[in-house]
Length: 229
Image 1 (cartoon, rainbow, N blue to C red):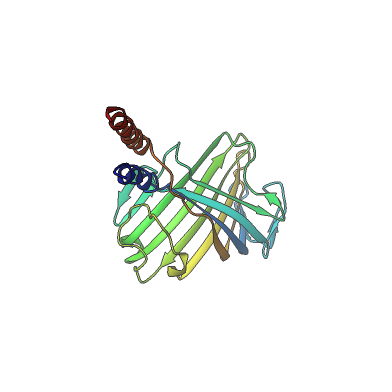
Image 2: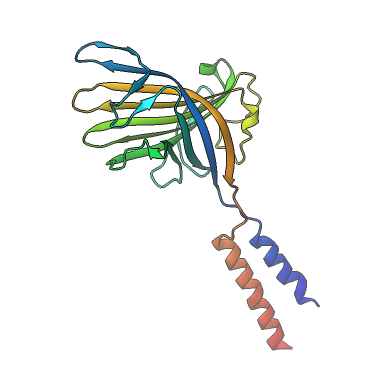
């Protein structure tokens, strides 16, 4: 009977560590669009655009997915706002319109960064959370971004990466998409608001190497004690 508490302690520790990647699905609707050509110095509001190679229009519904890794390293910090970025971090953002991805499928560069603002001076003391993907290839560069804003500044109590995130605490959300041609520098921009967001995967308890080591040590101690008897 004396063996049981030791073994239970090891099993309890197996469930004490948690994964750090949170995943979400979202939908949004495009409300405004612009096109601009710096070479012709013309542009303005448009109802639709084919600059990116596919038709994007005001009123289009966007379906997307994003994830963020709470262990992403700090890139910069100022005035209550912190930017997190790391090549190996499991941060991602992708979206599609009508089943067609608006991401660059042949991107030679892609980076997804996370920004957390707590009572940020540049936001007038508000809180904010944002995730953005910037990508490029030989023909174009683009950005997709989601931002969440809380004017009251009550969502966060620090600008660290949040372990859990309740999006009901934000009173404003936005989706942004820009596309720029490398050859002509012509640019298309679209923005809108989110219409839904749901959690698709919550981190589950997973063992870490230290936990395995402690459990193994406990089992070895039990075996050694049994042999002495």
